[in-house]
Length: 259
Length: 151
Length: 106
Image 1 (cartoon, rainbow over the protein chains, first blue to last red):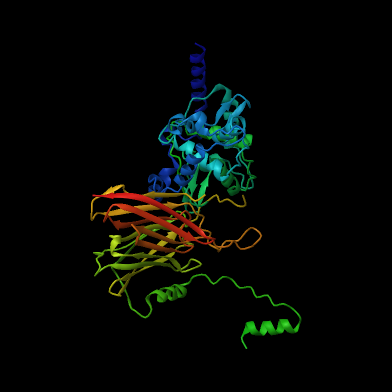
Image 2 (cartoon, each protein chain N blue to C red; image 1 turned 90 degrees about the vertical axis):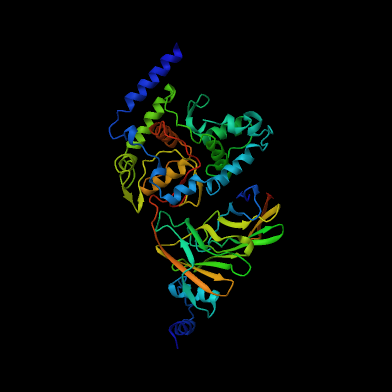
């Protein structure tokens, strides 16, 4: 009975929140994929041409490698990722009871590294963490992003929303001004996407490599001449919670390719 | 006495080290022509037979898909020996050389190239009879917004 | 850790032209870039790619810095006999990677 009540509250909260001014109507939401050229889309669609798959392959091999004082591989607890990791990327960031906060996929992997494998944390944007994240995220490809709000996450979702609508930096721009109000128009020759994190970690042509959502957000912040948040800091994770909620129902297409 | 030599001697005379700022030359249409001449020698190059496929507009110059091909029976008697690709504006004119044998089956290669800016790309085909053919394509290269800056 | 993705059909009919796709992890550092303090970053690229079919060379590519990072190459060969296709990438700083794929030709 309590579960049903919690779910109802969750749905009511989600519906009430969606009445925010300026939010893109659900029917008009588009993935960044839709704004890309035909050639870049072809690069993403072909697993034998998508450079992101090189990281997925590496992640697959790291998945089976025993590490740390515990001498354990991811596979020892989680078995075949193709089954056990299905849907995981679609519902992260998720609430972590231990820290009392949401954690994103990278943080979840590091929690396992430290707690279960007794191995040191993997560095943000390091090759190993990107490879493992890409491998796990790949297992959610084709699945919809989870839209049900865990009640414990509400405060963090609200904080992330506030960040999204807050003007920042020298250019005094809020994320919403480009990505809610001017998506589809051009900036420096590229089309402004709506900013949905459906394909992370992704291969950005500009980086000539694979990178995380937080790396891309840091690019945005540098672009608006704002001081970028720290990797893994609450500002970023709360924003990720909001962005994933904003993209609820959209399809995961990791590892994506973007210009 | 040319200007550079004058500066050298003048600087030496004053006990100064003359610093002459030299900007990397970069490719120009002339350098591309020289690079092509290195491949074809004194032979004539006829436009045609080679097909160079590039998108007319590229969202990012770091990875532009390119396909180059020649319709050829690829027999011992009549095949494509090589396909060469050059650029006009990149720091270096050479992009790649692809070498085929009759066992290649098709003279057709796809890859991804870097283009420094909007420019013309040229492909030269070398056939087994010693003839050279060419095709060219122009690509408009746009820049990404919201760049990285120092990480 | 060099990783290569190779796409070759496992089976083919004799005389059929098969398409091979290769993708290898490599930064392809051009040699034109500089660090924040202006120091040049040395060139580090794959310079050559060779495909052999039961030991005989069927395709070769000479690459320059203008080839994009994580080089992608699609080319063809004629399926003549069963055996092994070998792919070798070599380049700066003694870079050398060899991968193979078996093919059955009927």
